Length: 411
Image 1 (cartoon, rainbow, N blue to C red):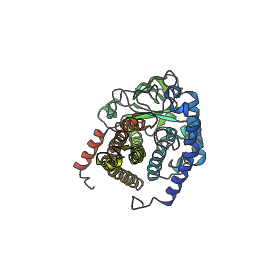
Image 2: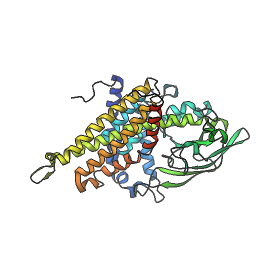
Image 3: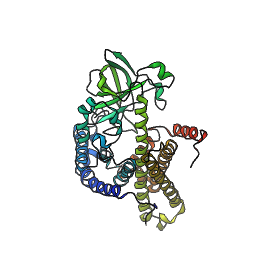
């Protein structure tokens, strides 16, 4: 029996169903063939914390296979060479990917072009010369990018950026630092945000610009891998820019108006992370329900104890609401509505209830819930982390209240 009263459009359902077959053939099968490499962090990462070359090759293979099959670029704008399916498809397919693949089959992250890793509407703002330089490789999945916004002293408040792009002839020189730059250890390009007019930036009236920078540019240094949750490696890094030369063709969007590009990216990230949290949490909840039905204690299945099952029922209610909120926000955005309040509510709620649902699934499993084999702690770490990514839950509540006090009170 369906839990949602309306059907996704037939086109999106067909793509989602095809994606399911692709994930089984190209993601789950690769994890099975390369289990030791992909499941053991001591083998996945090198001594310096980077992915081993064999892992990078598998990531590229998935991207390229997805591009060839039509899934990688399905939500990329048609003007860039994608299918232009929009944000409802983006949300629905990402949610399905995480729900079906869970935590272990993590190569699924590369089956659809992630806004900060590959082609998306952000690249509509690059120059024609930049398109000619990067677009074919990005669309084919051969190359990837990263999004250099956050800094050691500038997270939620991007106006605090310290990275500077100073005029140099007809171009600029970028100097500064970036942190939490996901995918940067394997990326070919980075969209770097820098202050180009300090006075306007200080007044929060612009003054920030975005530039497309090859990661092998002179003066571009990956200083260190950021290791989290006790892992021996990671795909987040700290970057240093020392007088990196950029030409006019590397400007993304309008000069001094790069914050628009940043907000565009962050909004895509909020849709993605809502889908990610709901999908992983549904996967975890279903594992907990299966376990509760088979695990016995005191002569009966633990599913007979309300102390075990009521928390799972609570999570089912919360995840149902979060899923509906995600679909609604995506539909509003596809209609051209700004949906600032709705997207903020969606992301904050989805990641909070998602982390709580996974925590309850761990509790249901008892000590088994903490084992590497189940992957529940890995899922928890992912969803707990995105309670901070693309706007902390506190910043999102600030945005919601600002909209409400400004008269946007429709719920």
